[in-house]
Length: 111
Image 1 (cartoon, rainbow, N blue to C red):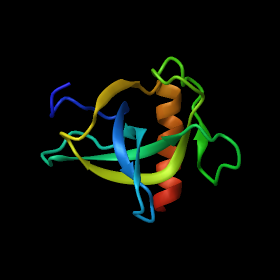
Image 2 (cartoon, rainbow, N blue to C red; image 1 turned 180 degrees about the horizontal axis):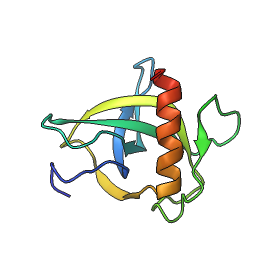
Image 3 (tube, rainbow, N blue to C red; image 1 turned 30 degrees about the horizontal axis):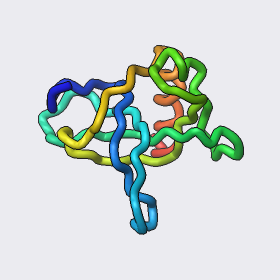
C-alpha cells in the first residue's frame, strides 16, 4: 500500500518499541485515526496474549476474517507511527470489533 492509503481500522505490521525502549518487535496494530494531513498514523497495538487482559482490552471477535493468523486482543497501547513505516497490510477490523475498539478508546482516554 502507498504511504497515504492506510485508513481507520486497517491492520498493519510495524516495528513496535517495548514500553521501556529496551528493544522492539514486529507486531500488528490497528490504525485508529481518521483522515488527516499529518504524516503520522495513530494506532492501537494487538497481542496474541489473550488472557489477563486489562479493563477495555478485548479479544477480537473476527480476528481470522481481519487477516490475523491467531486469536488476538486489542491492547491498551497507543502508538504514533510515520505513514511510511508499516511493513505490510494485514487486513481490516470488522464493524463489530471496530465498535468495541471505539468504546475502549473512550474508556482508556477518558473522553
